[in-house]
Length: 191
Image 1 (cartoon, helix red, strand yellow):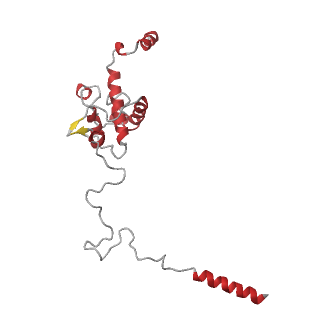
Image 2: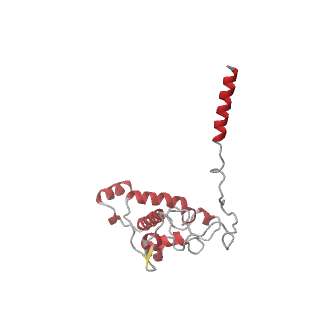
Image 3: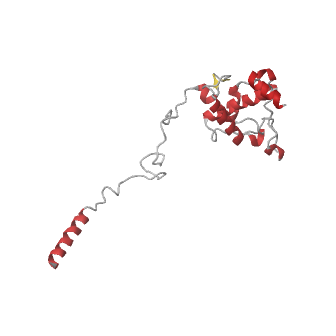
């Protein structure tokens, strides 16, 4: 019985050893940023072909991705703005914009109270009359001492923030006649 067990163990060991081959595990390949003598520039990694667009990154809607058409800021949102979009815009505005602009858009946020130069109020005529694409462009590219938020805020969220800015502007200059009749009576009772 001892010889049979030893022979069986030897056969199993030979079979397992035969399965261990390095030809598929050790392949000639370059790791990222390895030097190469094959290409004239000495690099193993190749640059993408000029004009290559990553999957899902084709941006042909100029109004949506630039806030402009033929270099002129658009005065229309590139997608319909719903109540849910306005709520998301308010949420993003409160996160990214209030440190400088404050919750009402007056330009007296906490950063300004600590000595930074104040941004203009959204209530000035120049910004109330500015096309909505202007706000998108400023968030995308920065303006004055405001830096770009393109890497922090998605394209659709920048449009939602612009819609919320418009809502703030309307709220600061609304008349009682702008309020629906049933809501107007509630306001008058509360005063």
